[in-house]
Image (cartoon, rainbow, N blue to C red):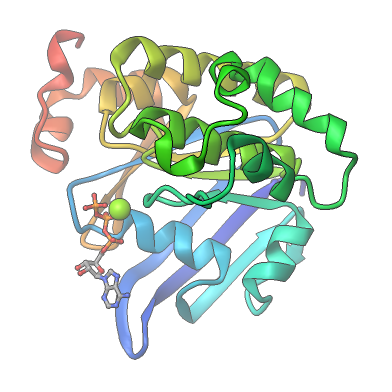
Length: 239
Ligand SMILES: Nc1ncnc2c1ncn2[C@@H]1O[C@H](COP(=O)(O)OP(=O)(O)OP(=O)(O)O)[C@@H](O)[C@H]1O
Ligand SMILES: [Mg+2]
């Protein structure tokens, strides 16, 4: 089987408390999946569990067929998992360029140019301190630094939060192009449902830690009843 990441019967949480219940999920290389649902349903917990930052009580997580359920977060990163957490993750006292170098994992310093090609704005700000960046620029920096680690599977937790609509579209386009060009698989958690469903080919809806719907994105986009019930939006006028 050639799934980039696959999750079987995952029940997980923090300490003895289960947040996720029997979650099944898989993403093929180069494929893009959206995970949506209301606040507090367990979206971030799902990504944390995949990254080894939560406690698994049952089930397995596999990366390209390798069971990584018990690996440390560090070993998962080495195995090819890239994680952009919901809280922006930059070093505020370092410059943009120093932040990017920190993401290179030992590759030559000149490779930061890849990040500047994807996000020209970061090149303009390369000597600025992380703390001087706008929220959107910090978000780009977090994504860019994660991509420099050349992940095979990219976990994104609300990367569009706080970004202007035009930047959201640019970022989604950049990531979709990258998935096509490099085969990186993308698992996107996002509250901006319309953007998420446009970006991803398939979608799952979480409710109280359980998958309550899965389909291709177009099918879900047309199900205004489900979007209303589980996300609280009625398809945003595009059904
Ligand atoms: N470290 C933790 N310890 C205990 N409970 C936690 C912890 N982190 C989250 N939770 C609980 O787990 C549940 C799911 O939280 P989670 O952050 O996964 O939700 P979410 O779907 O990402 O929400 P949001 O859309 O607001 O980001 C919530 O009830 C939350 O209070
Ligand atoms: Mg969250």
